[in-house]
Length: 372
Ligand code: ADP
Ligand code: MG
Image (cartoon, rainbow, N blue to C red; front, side, top):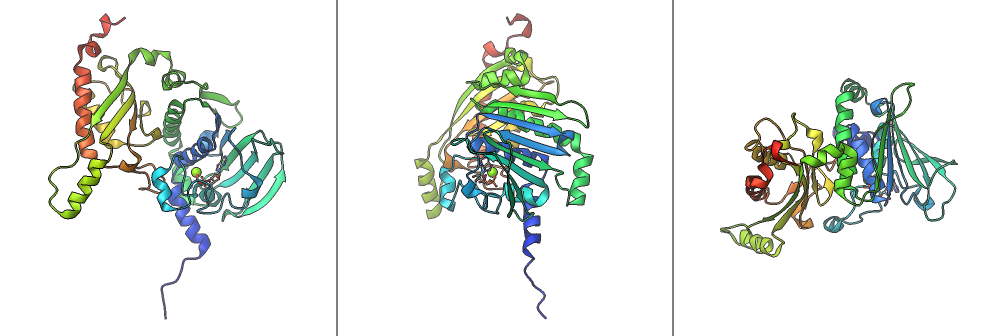
């Protein structure tokens, strides 16, 4: 008797969704990215009970077209990509069409939307667990979209328990994420608020529609931070790879030669004399072409160099790596948090050299007491 059978569709959906939406951060990341992709200039993120009860993201973006109501939460349905080749020229955060469908499978999910162009009547959309549209009802809605995710992981008891257990830490991580999006998103107003039980809603942080990342940083971290910061503007010249021995390596090397071999690192970093008195992961933000991401190796390299100038503290850092879209891959992990950088080892070496030079410059290492 045959023992290998296809897994029933609904179960496959639930299994895969659990890989896209792994935690509270994934939810917030996916929703905020959708708002940014929709061209929003104003984004409100609201947490109830640190997100355990609900997470709501409201934007003033382009909204959903009624023609898309049926497909919006279906798996692998996206307005952003249709073939694999589109990936290299992608300028949106999303591309897999998995977030909304996964949220349908893992939470009590609903959408309020009104199109921006025609300011049409608002609609409330409810979905089945599979992502199939269940109902459309007329509702009061502002221009743009509000997505609500209630009781995340209500149907995955183990994950729900873990989330409850670690909620404070998770929430802290989420704020770190939001800081990064709020700081990099020039021209977008961000407002984050939180409500506990029956208490009043409190503002957590906000940015105005600033024109520079520096102003965003001031809004998020306070004007004091600015005194400590110096501009980061490094140009890392990357050597094309050396010593190809095989034909394929030679071909590869030629291609590498044709590629742009320059990486820019732009942003802000605290002067060594001003570092943070503690490990402050929420104050270390890394981006690749303005896409917030975890770059543990880059972070390690920066911290290492910094440590040689300031042994007791770690830096505030906001660093945007500007590189050719061909030289990294965002399609590495289901949650798109991991980015694979081409020639990372060489990049790290150059970065360390340049940072060293920068910090050695006496202008940046004068004792704190002599600074204005
Ligand atoms: P992806 O972002 O990978 O396309 P999602 O599941 O996150 O997949 O979203 C599915 C589609 O729903 C998007 O392609 C987009 O067209 C639409 N969408 C999602 N969120 C919003 C939003 N806040 N405003 C307007 N459209 C949205
Ligand atoms: Mg998306």
